[in-house]
Image (cartoon, rainbow, N blue to C red; front, side, top):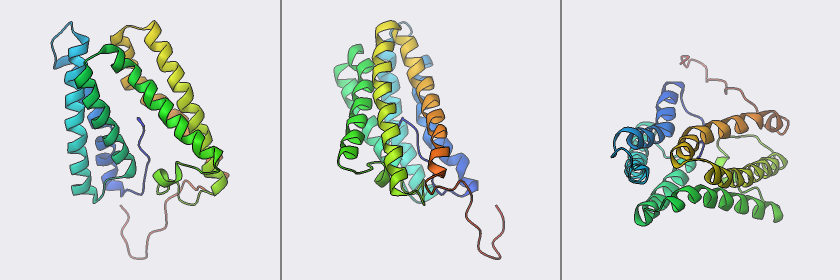
Length: 212
């Protein structure tokens, strides 16, 4: 949501595949960046990694449709961002654009969410409704508010990292640190969500259906 994908109603025997589809493209990007491009040229390596990332997300979408029968709204959004900004990264081949690109994305998300809140609308609801079934309107508004603040903070943190870290360190933290922080933030919201109608429990199985 990088960057983090919502956990939807996925059969247990497919959850490993779902996890691989979510994080596989990111792993491919990092491996190509580290080992598949000329040493000593981080910009060229980042471009090679971006190309691999773009191919990997398309493959992930095809596999998701084939094996899971659908492509989640979160994956669609991720693909649009990866393919759109990936094409710009290749076109400009400029380290400044590569490093400031996350700030643009985070700030854009924050503005969209804050804009929705000003109109009394929870913009996350249409994207994540399947993942938080039962959540009340008040809960959706609080969730949108929390993520809007999070994205605004991430935009500021990214600019701070750009100003203080080398390109290689910045990219390593961006690839691995940001998803980890996003996951922890998502988990920190669970108690609030449970107070507003979201239940972290499995739905009862129909009679006669074998356990997974």
